[in-house]
Image 1 (cartoon, rainbow, N blue to C red):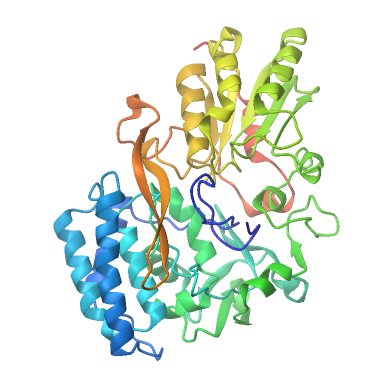
Image 2: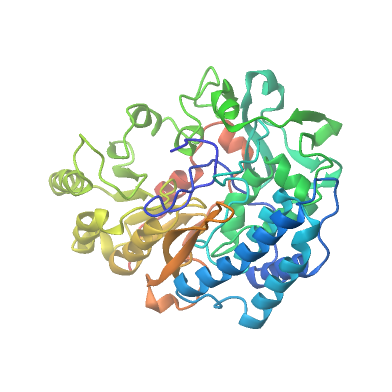
Length: 466
């Protein structure tokens, strides 16, 4: 599995891979409005560019595959028309079918991505640039969005002068317009799904070209604050992954992260020693604050290490012998897995009234928190009165989930489809987000200085009488 090149989802069921990109300052419309925008894109004329149009034979194959795709969605999805009506969806299918003879393969992939985005949930996904027979190239940057803008957080050594710069446009397309077009290709549970995925897709020139953002699929010019601009040539995946990168994260004195996974790009002085030992989960007593910090980065037990249950029991034994003021569980880098992996941890906390009744349990969440990690966060909140801190997860509390891969033979494309409805907290109904008690705005300066604003907020919060 790639460590840095593509977006991630619940690793339990999908081949979608890990990725470091997200967005928070774009101020998108609500999700229902975003679905309307996707429909508008699909029902309008195709983007016009000079890409090679498919031959009639190839176009006919894609038209047949389009209907197979629709049939597969109907057969597999737990509730295909939960966000977009059947009539609207079928209109979109017809519009794509009519357009396929006049588009390129890249544009056909983007049309399919737009159609899947209409389904409207984060476990039903189609990555236009990450297919078996076609992989889009990359621009050699890492991006992250903060409350004060979209920044370059890491870049190869030859582009290190761009690290820390804020992006304002792409090929003279204003960044807000570029974002609007990219959003039309992404299926999400809520707006934080766009937060997570959009900046990743902004680094795929062939996607940008198919969407009419870039003038070429081979070269793209990024524009930055202060009138700075930089041209980039599209590079293949293997070259992208080999780059010698520098990061803006001040936790690394030399600017060189040991990995480009998000855990490392967002390491802090507290987490870095454990990450360097490649731990999936760990806990540490913070003596000065009389608090325990438990980082849980994936819902799986790690080979050749204590299980999550064993580590939880070790932590509980310490807590029983050394009463602590607060327990802080970090799910910000956890994209999912098997939710029952954390059963002993959750049950043990629910049975400790000194935490559940006094508001001394905090759970840190963020835009990368997804799937099984959202299940764990919701249960900690409902059963153990955990106080959620950070930014809302991109997973909806109650939603179509359990993504399963679907392979289509004519074109070799694949997608994931939600096969079950997962109700994590019935009391939240159709809410888009898990409720936060303390919402934190993340600035680029805090990232640059390796300041963990979420942890600081939890440590500074007062104890409650719940």
